[in-house]
Image 1 (cartoon, rainbow, N blue to C red):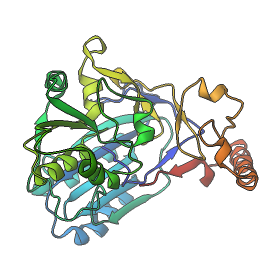
Image 2: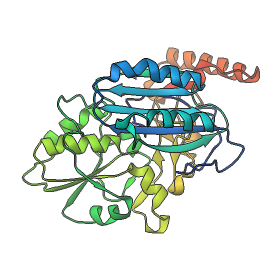
Image 3: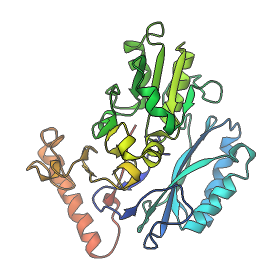
Length: 339
């Protein structure tokens, strides 16, 4: 699962790749989709994580796999893509390590490769909170399966927190959830300090896209003395895959950190695209705005960009289009997301 933001994977913004429904299945939904994407993470103590970097990188390169994997003392996190048999081979390779034998992953399919290169990075954290001593391997909240999530968040005594960032919450969240309005996960601890009281807020339930941020957030809150802390196992993606729409308490779409931009119930690809300049997810209506110019601006950043910046982006977009006409990829076709 990708966090999510620490991953910084490349994804397509303006040349949307055809992606079929993401499932926990063994075969593609369509034979037209030839690239398998696997998003994975696991909090587990890896004292030798620095020694793992080169062997994992070489194994991925040998199998022609591309993407980004993060390694830290607290575990592994990342998203990779390649031919189905190669992705299954590298996952089997990783699971040969007894510490990763139960490593879980989520799958999606694409007809074009979503990454340009393979990176294995060493990090202090696999998802960046910036608070020392927070370790889900040591203490963590209570995992809640998607089937039990509705009951938890419907309890009037439960505070429901969306641990994602503002632009993610912008296009969808759970009914009644609190939006902390954070721009990075690093701001979450300060939000808790300013707005929550362990003596008053006895029950707190949290969620995120794939489960990694809320798992770490639950560890932080347990360390802060909050008694009952719950987090959605598998994140929003597992909930949308598992819970029928007619029973769902999810409202809107779910932002994802790959070429799909957003997904709906059943993990069907959503209707959102993304602004290159400010990275905000955009609805079809917002893309009809006079302030929207593909690759250059949108209603959220139009007034914030200088004329020189817009001109620079127009030149970049011109080069992208020329590269496409030549049947080539241009580095401007992809974009990193930031912390």
